[in-house]
Length: 160
Image (tube, rainbow, N blue to C red; front, side, top):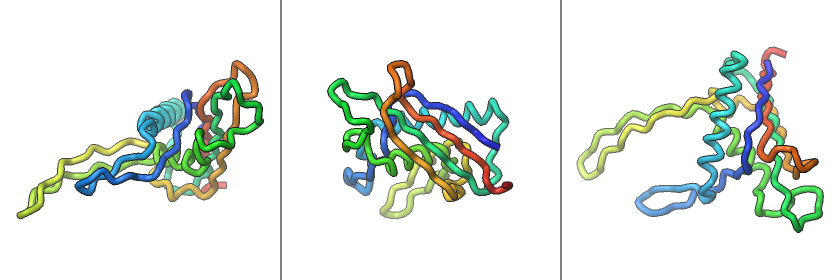
């Protein structure tokens, strides 16, 4: 079964984590969170509409990122750092497609504070290790009316 959907907006890469003190880490690219939320929402909506469900087997994921062409750019492909590396763009999409399990609260121990419970996040893949074939590309729109965002395809290949 194949799940294909489009996500509108400028794609953002999943950057490295940056320490901010007290053992806390934050994403280097701030806009990654909202982009991943759009990808997750688009995937869940498409999966619901088509009755698509991942059974844990192998999947192929193909992602085509389409970036807005700057007015002064005449090169055919977005090869500058400003749009991000294709591997980090793909990592943001894969993480958004994957279920994030909830974490229970951890009680305080002597000398250590407790931790609050964190809710899980739904996804269309049970684990991104199920991705056995990943294809990712980035480009500018072909015409003035083509969308900016990502076209994402998830195909079950375990029953081929």
